[in-house]
Image 1 (cartoon, rainbow, N blue to C red):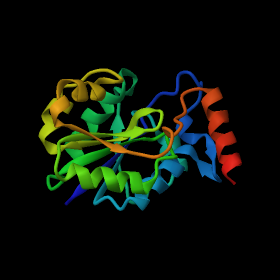
Image 2 (image 1 turned 90 degrees about the horizontal axis):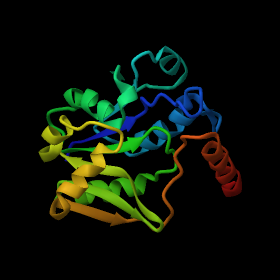
Image 3 (image 1 turned 180 degrees about the horizontal axis):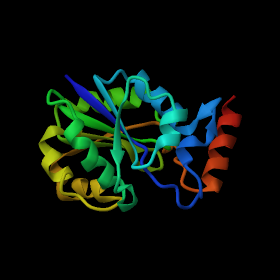
Length: 196
């Protein structure tokens, strides 16, 4: 089954005051760490969305093997990134695995479990020990709806509108940290330090 990985990294980082994609992490950047995970998943196609004016990201982050999708309207939320990426999704793709560019703690085996289940169902999410989270599986049958979404959390609305078509995969761990504030960045660094 042909699967496209989509890493959303077009956020404007308003609360941080600087591009979170470029925050130092594990000897590179936060986005580099997420892309390493995405590459380990061996997607047939890997897309990464970046803000409209993303020269610094493209100069610093290792984007080899990725199709870069510029999202000029990135300030209007994640749905703008998804809409910008949809035309780039390979026609052979059965679906998209949606990953957050500021969430490097997702494990490749979680993605594999999600994709295995996605082969049979339309939309899916991960049920961690402390709640629901990314990555998400979005089958080709919902691409039309994805193109119509607006706002930051709009993708989650698909699960509310199609509860009978949605699945959850259990993940025996907490939701991986994502970084929107300096406190969350420090928590990610502390968690990484504790693990080593």
